[in-house]
Image 1: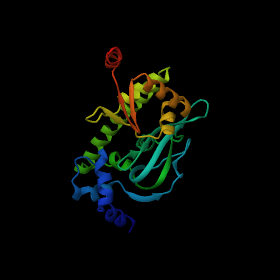
Image 2: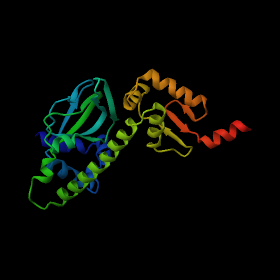
Image 3: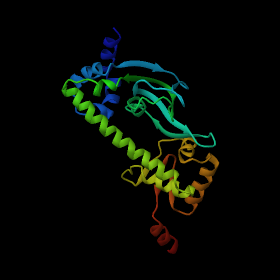
Image 4: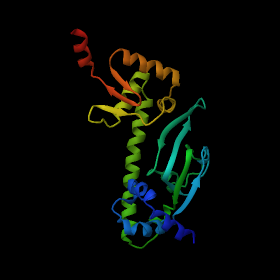
Length: 239
């Protein structure tokens, strides 16, 4: 009965979009999504604001696909300050590394930022079976791509936090974001969350952003920021 409920839920257009955003299901036709969810023993659960899907030192048995809502992952530094790694909305797959490695002591925690709907899936069903199912092969290939993509994200995070100056952290982070047609990038965080991500306090971040903007190196429009080249700034000042 629960599985039937899941299959009915994933045919809802509110969730199809999120599932389609998740690269685990790339290459699987809409009419086969229910089969893929069934293969993974999918279960849908509502989680509530400030709940922890996994806590520091905890165990996560199943990976989660966020269908609706918002969650964040974080860890603690050596001073026990919480450092936000990422904030995610619908379509994000999380916890696969913990699950596949049977981690008994999670180094990260996942907190629910707002009431959310999560599809929990059993990734062990991808590699534990011996049959040569086409859907299973697609899921396995996509899972490898998932790990490769997240490895790039973690490498970016390490590079950012390894910078000694806050200014360098800011500019390197901004370069990781996609520009729109006008050259602006959109910050997916609040300033408090961005400060946590960069490993500094909010006041220090606000002061440094103000300095950089005063120097003409940044144009800030709410959550949109444009990086001005140093050469163009010198040219403008010389006129």
